[in-house]
Length: 119
Image 1: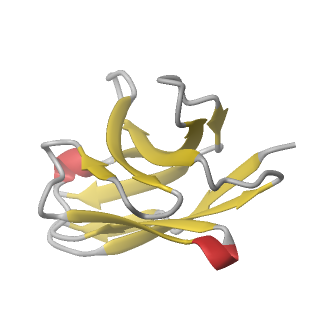
Image 2: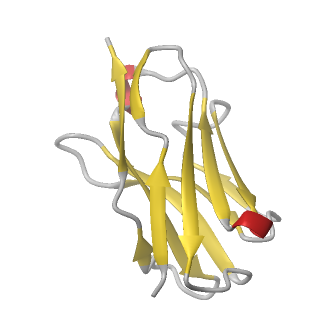
């Protein structure tokens, strides 16, 4: 089965940096979009960033442009989200997700990792 496992979340202060990791297994992801989503308390899940497995296409939510960077290491089946200049409003559970090119729906999801930005 496809499995996505996030790690790297934690408690940080405003202005700090954090890198989230997603280990992908169970499938060849060469024709996939990989994405990061987040869900803050009391809010719906929202899109954060995406990348094609070959790294050729990137997309970011306006709220994180210039601060977050999505990347991948295809040889290691890893996807990363580098988060800089973190704000209190970035506090959320962050999820790794995957979908095929032709689908607008992300069909595979990790269990999430908590990111808490203090103050």
